[in-house]
Amino acid sequence: MYVIVIGGGKVGYYLSKHLIERGYEVTLIEKDPRRAEVLTSQLGEVVMVGDGDEMAFLATTGMERADVVVAVTGDDEDNLIACQMAKRKFDVPRTVARVNNPSNVRIFKTLGVDVALSATEVLLDLLERELAKEPAKRAPTSQPNPKR
Image (tube, rainbow, N blue to C red; front, side):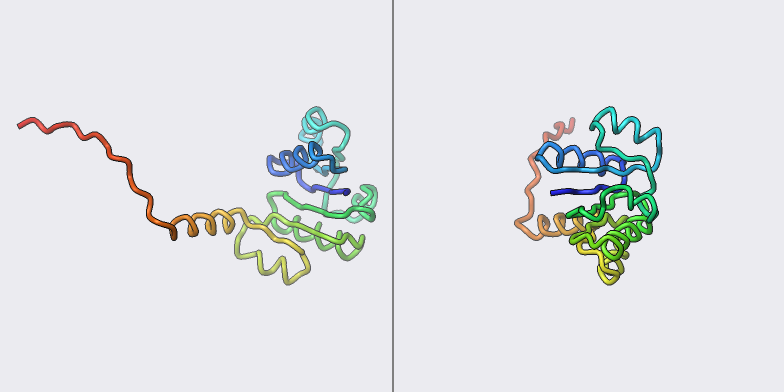
């Protein structure tokens, strides 16, 4: 399976690293040349320097054969545009976008992104599920004996 990851920050780095370790073919796109150099030293020649929301550049990435495009930049607009181009111009079967502003999740889905993930929503959902379970009991704390 061929996966293109757009955005070489912490999320993109660790995602790419884990995908490579699991045997996936990966291309990681990072627009900052200095950051791309660091990523190349850590991940190898899977890193391409370029803008993940520019059509001319994306045409050089092999996107037309990608099975999945994952956009994980820190900018919702860039992630949306990258996923829309992957889907509409390159017929990528599956797109996944990191959504930084939780209120944008519905918009991403309406505009054709297959999976729109908001870390805030995911964590909030997990927290609410945990809180709905039996209340956690506090461990007894030792209180100093008050002097009388």
